[in-house]
Length: 164
Image (cartoon, rainbow, N blue to C red; front, side, top):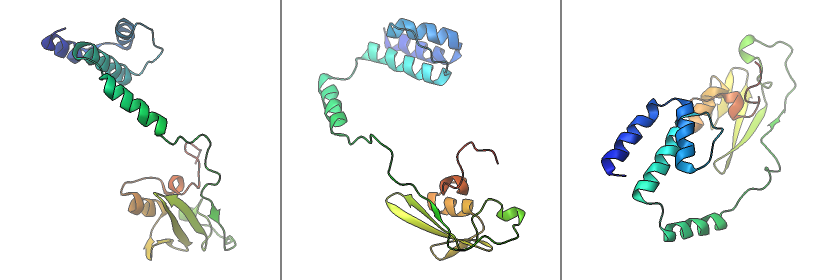
């Protein structure tokens, strides 16, 4: 296959329907797929077409990848303990709508993150982290990660996908 032909074929892949992509996948890989994810199919087929046209990995590269894979430390079981909230104060009688779901004031949350154990103290009005007071757990999580994320999920106070 010439370079121009390859370029045209790669450009045409995103316009194919999922069923056409599955047919093309079977042609280039010699086996069927149950995948229905258009993006994945396009990427896999494009990779295979390029490998067939321009050559695959060298034997030396394959050998090195195999060595690296064998040396990798694989986790075969989950960590023994996970981050948990440790309550150090009783729950107050009245709860406002803004505090719903938060642990009671005085609770200290511990969260391992990038080799450190982070500590956040729940206050009456906000959360304290490294001497600063934030309005919410999400604000603390954003300060830590640099991107917006749910403070409840980050500090593992609720499960992903749980009903609110």
